[in-house]
Length: 118
Image (cartoon, rainbow, N blue to C red; front, top):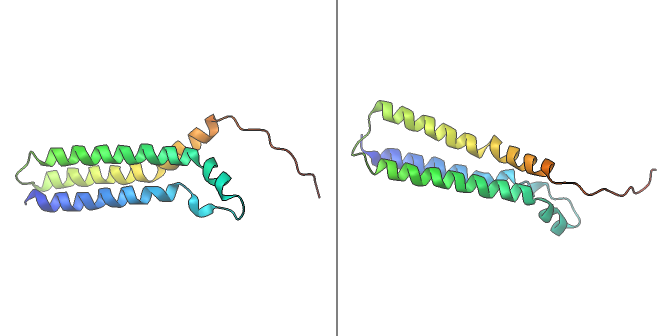
């Protein structure tokens, strides 16, 4: 099989994984009110997004360079490629939110003032 089909499929998986990274940022949970403060408070999610985007981007570049060395692929290479793409999808899913929550926990929180009880 020519490598062009494998590369096209792989590029699609990489593109979808990178596009879906933004969903982990959490902008969809914006409350009514002070949107600016909410967006600034999401900085750990932005940092996790940037790290994950760069990680997947580097993996895509390496994948591209790797397939420049092949004229065709066989079944074992296809299966190895599927395993790699599975790892790419994993990088896209849980580690983004884990990185974000780890950064949030390591940041000292400001004491909150109480507004009184009802």
